[in-house]
Image (cartoon, rainbow, N blue to C red; front, side, top):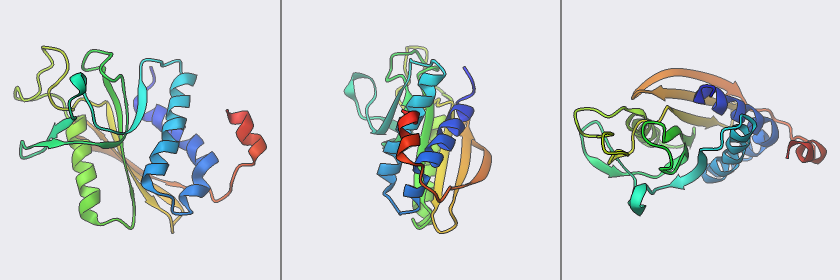
Length: 192
């Protein structure tokens, strides 16, 4: 399997080509995540990766319990990620969790953006100090995502700022332009 970052980047490129103009109309973050999820699922299917699901606002783990993370201060917090790619517990850890995405508009307060980044740090952290134990199957708290991606939508600038997280640390960032045009319905039909 290609790296999860490349899978995400290809899905995002297709998403922006077909849906980018909607981002410029100030559509909600939830709508953005829902539409992006479709493109990620399509990319996974194209790459013949069928073990993973793409879910938005997902807040459950095994045995129907609420998903939780442990933050830097070792406090247990409930979590609802904007968009995740995971096996819904069908694969054993550490292969269960693939991609976690948090989306914010640039107009949102800094503390909300920082909270999303802290969540991605926790979600991409490996088990440590016995807090998360993979020996008995899945961890008690969500962790071990291969990659976390923070997307800041900068509508006025027609761009998206991306920050990538792995193993609990920021590893990369990049800026991409949002196309201002809409793809015709004919081309959209070919897409699907």
